[in-house]
Amino acid sequence: MEGTEMIRMAVAGVLGFVLIFIESLIVMKIKGYHGIEFGGLAPFINVWAMNFFLVFAIITQITNWYQDRVGFENGEEDNIY
Image (tube, rainbow, N blue to C red; front, side, top):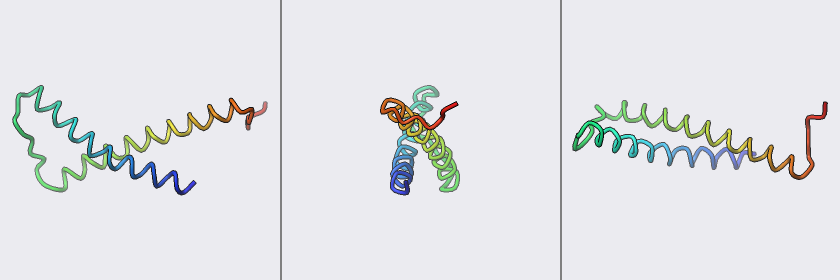
């Protein structure tokens, strides 16, 4: 289990930076800007942290959904009422 958590964290970290780039491009296109100033390192890290936790939560939900789906297909049902 620990290996998958580390992989999720690494993927979330990288995709957090990718989301910053995509969000910046969207804002520049809508507002007609040529660049974006984040106001220093702290605000940039805050935006990255929000994106990191968003992506980590999404990946966690997708992982849980996939494990439940594969488990039910293989007949490994844990919830028997």
